[in-house]
Amino acid sequence: MSLLKKNTKSFTLIEALIAILLVSLIVISISSLITGSVFLTRKRIIYECLVNAANSAIEACRGGKNISSFNCGGLNIDININIDCSSITVPGNTWDVNCEDITVTARYGNTTHTLRDMVCKFGGA
Image 1 (cartoon, rainbow, N blue to C red):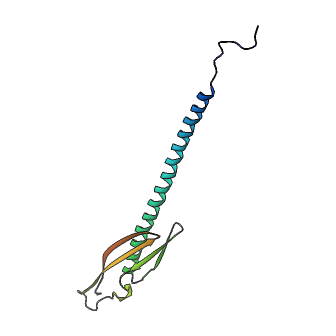
Image 2: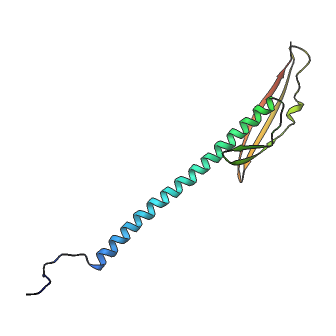
């Protein structure tokens, strides 16, 4: 009597290699999805920081201050404002208005966001 049975079922070398190949393809697909998701999330965070920086620069300009940089989540955003915000003065007459169109460009690396608004100072009582 022999030690090996003739009807023993087992994997062949080719079946094992195909199984390894399939598992490898699944792992590679999942890792590329995760990598793509991380890249898109970073890009979205950078854009949100640019929008926040531009909005903050507009609000600072309403208060008569120029800001040239903005820190957002560890990112240092460069800000460029087309006018000197301290030059927008309050008019002397009660019903007068002094308005300026301003353009703010926020930049981080190669990504930029531009925001345009009007800042007005109204005459005091």
